[in-house]
Image 1 (tube, helix red, strand yellow):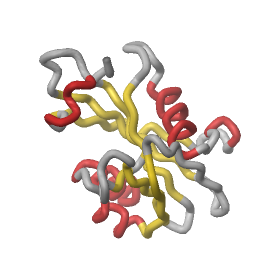
Image 2 (tube, one colour):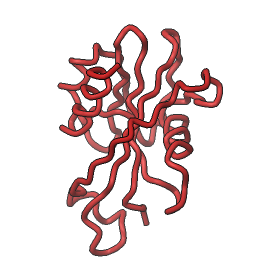
Image 3 (cartoon, helix red, strand yellow):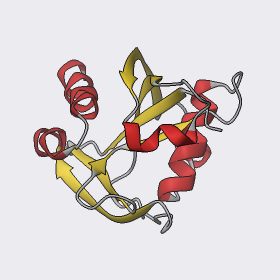
Image 4 (cartoon, rainbow, N blue to C red):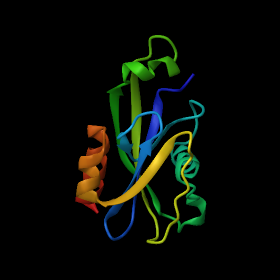
Length: 147
């Protein structure tokens, strides 16, 4: 069963381009890296780093210190009904913690094919509009409005 606490990581370049990945289980569902904690006590930054590596092949520990930033923001949202089976019975809400990760311009991306089928780098305004999830778009805009 999944834990209803997750991370969202806005991956970006200094140029302002943001990485979006398309889910394998839902066509045209573009998003930033997301994922649930493995254990209730898992450190949020470690969960964010793990999810980034699992979904994109980017090793956060090989980037300069400070590349991964906790945005100190979280939201609570209702889990889509078609995905509730992944959680304990009766769980319908998730708490998502937002992070941002700056990567070099030439960062290679290696997708996990069972999770994602495509990726693209877009200017942050376009990326925010393309996200399936409104809150994902808000996370992108919030990051770039303050940095």
